[in-house]
Image 1: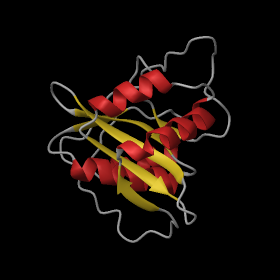
Image 2: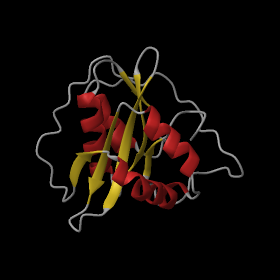
Image 3: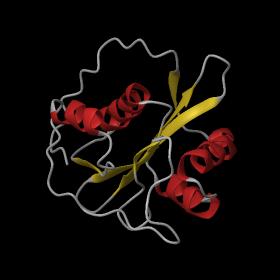
Length: 157
């Protein structure tokens, strides 16, 4: 959780560009999420996109969606997630945009395998509050590849 995000990603070598999510991005976001999560979560993602007050889509040099992040307002803070990206640098770029656009405190739930990303966020104002488990149905591990950098919420994965 970050009460105050300090930002400061600075210049990045990442080749993608980040844009606010629009309705035309939804189908590509669903496809990118399916590849990262290992299941098609169309209903959940449509609902989360509708609930999100801010969202960012990462487009590669060819103009195709390569990642995304959503910011969903909660009663006390904005929840960032899911975050899907091709690598940790791209995930940091997406999170930086959402946290920077957020009007107040933010929370993000990152799978424990992403230590470098967690360290990056700690240096920018996030603090580790707890290490909750990620709940899953019909499985006991996140899909291989490590492209899911933050879950939608603890309950949704």
